[in-house]
Length: 113
Length: 112
Image 1 (cartoon, rainbow over the protein chains, first blue to last red):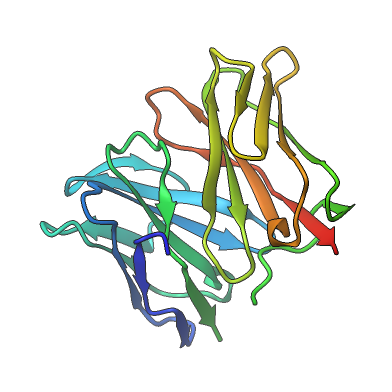
Image 2 (cartoon, rainbow over the protein chains, first blue to last red):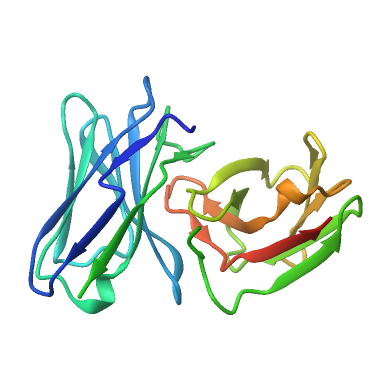
């Protein structure tokens, strides 16, 4: 158990809908990362937050947004969903936001039908 | 469990053999490299890391080798066990960017 908790574990929704994925980092970790893993693209970095503020942005679509709350949990919002958004979404956390030894959650499997 | 990818390079070994998983990275400015292991249905798990001022680092049963000249990284697993069966990813990061780039992964299958 990495100590990073993601909910829900599975999500099935229709195209055009909006969903929110939630991540609770390990106790004491200030930084949260979001990744998308699809069969044909591998692990893609989406966005990073450190102590409530956005620190780095990767290949995140404009339809997607995220935030980190004062209690350090984070949410990833995916809107106007398309079939191609079906993927595993991982959250990771690390102590100092320098991407050293980031710990990953078990992921949320999103299926868009 | 869930598969993490199709069409991945696959390495099949016998239990007890040593395994070598290779990774070619793309950015000559990358200065920090990490190996992750991902078992079916789970998130990636940190195995070992290495910075660009080193060419070798050892952990428990694992060794990472870095060849900056040819931009190549390898992960050696000694006395491979069935529990080592997983997909292995290398990731590279350029100092100050905090945006790691993951390789596509290699599937390791260990036969008892």
